[in-house]
Image (cartoon, rainbow, N blue to C red):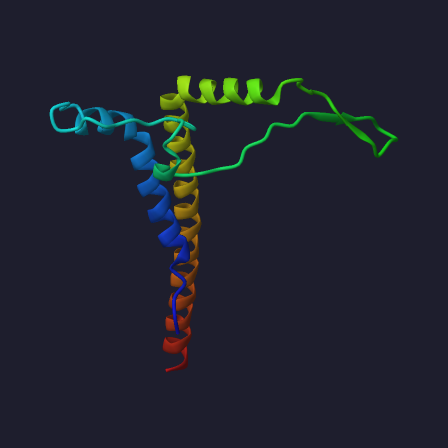
Length: 142
């Protein structure tokens, strides 16, 4: 019988990625501080000309809608006239707050890993209790 280790692998992956993302800026600054040996370097959200080196890629959109009781209709509550300017400002804001965003991402991933670990520990405890019940039944039958 195979055991399901997917949750443990997910915990390992989340913790590993959280550590990489959370410590990225400090690591990068130290690892590539020697300009004599590292003449090309950079990072950021959507830098021009560097799409082939991306670390992760995501699609993001912002929505705001509201509706009223008694009506199934909803209506957009925010619209912009210049998508390109808004997107450029969004990317600039992401880059301005990049270190905080990475630290926040790492915190979220660590919390997810901790929650998954708690669930896994509960499942292990439940299985252990079932095995102990089997032992008691076996001793009673002997």
